[in-house]
Amino acid sequence: MLDRARVGSILLLVKGSKKPDRRHNLSIKEVVMNDKKKAYEEKLDAQLKEWNAQINLLQAKANNAKADAKIEYIKTIEVLQRKQNEAKTKLQELKAAGDEAWEDIKAGAEKAWGEVRTAFRDATARFK
Image (cartoon, rainbow, N blue to C red; front, side):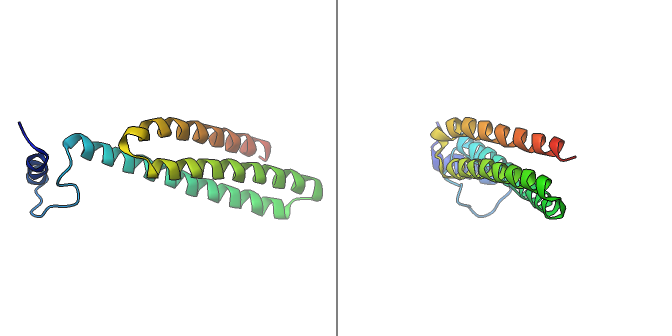
């Protein structure tokens, strides 16, 4: 039977690393979970940046719109920003979660992300 230190040493050998990193005492399952979490969180961070760019584009269109259209743009932007803030909060919860709670919080984050995606899709269709 392998203990954690031995698993960490094996991981280092497999990776070809000569010096231990912070993960040298983690099990293979924990290393995989950490990598999975990090990749997922990076994906969500990238999506938030894309949504920021889309909001900025809508704000530029609102600035050039006539008064009645401008009001619609502003209302839509406020809704999008509120939804985006909810998604950002979920991402922060996800980043702070331990391995056991991470999957549960991920489900909530995916729901929030779906709502934001739908709101952006509706806004894009409305202002084409």
